[in-house]
Image (cartoon, rainbow, N blue to C red; front, side):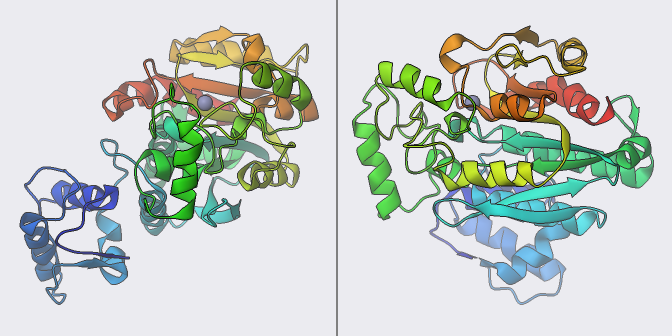
Length: 371
Ligand SMILES: [Zn+2]
């Protein structure tokens, strides 16, 4: 990685945020690497007795890690997510990270592990590209939980040490890295993948591009890829006109065709999760059912989630009742699985909603590893 004067992208905004947080930068966070940003980099380098190049490279990123807290006011990309994860791992040595697979564009799909209990729980974010706000949501939770644990403090109203010893929590903060990069304009506009996405989008003029994009980079909706009545999902979505790769709602040629869906499936199969939360936006609702399955405790936990968040429990609308990750999890294991639809508005939800969403769902994230 190398950023210098003249560059303009979300990663520049991220470093402006970091430098500003640490009082090296006073300008606006506009994603444009100008002279003021360069001066900020130089003054950071000066304060650490580094050579004053005024550019940001991998070496400098290592030096910056201790100064990075999870940003909650800027767009996220794959690269930003990875640097934030590195920073969290640097600060809290009890965290672990593993790779669970790769995206179409060969980006790592990472999983952070926190806790050492026998109760194993899985949280997933950003399966849908334009719901990327769920990535900082999960990363901030990792940070706050880790911070509480390292200080022996409570998180929400729970003792973090007890949580840590009771549950091993696996968090996949960015399930669809290529899609999120497309939505937040971190994909080379000359690349084959980008041009293909534009072509797909041209077939769906009513869906704004790129901000209406939910799918993976090939136009497959990852939350319609799981073997839970997939044929019914196919019939419904084909009837709605999604018969080929699309910004959303295309089920693919067969279940688990998309590498991102397969990675999550394989990871789930090879573990022993007792509960699963997958974070989406929007609606302030919790989907907790699949057909007539009634996993033990599922309703009790759903009601607790609703109580602490103020979100309402709903049956999934028929048109989106099949082939989702939550659907497959419930069908396969008869264990509690939830889709948490965070926030209200039009996706992508403005990052300005972050604090409200975090406050609403913090209780769900804590109770999910407590109950
Ligand atoms: Zn979604």
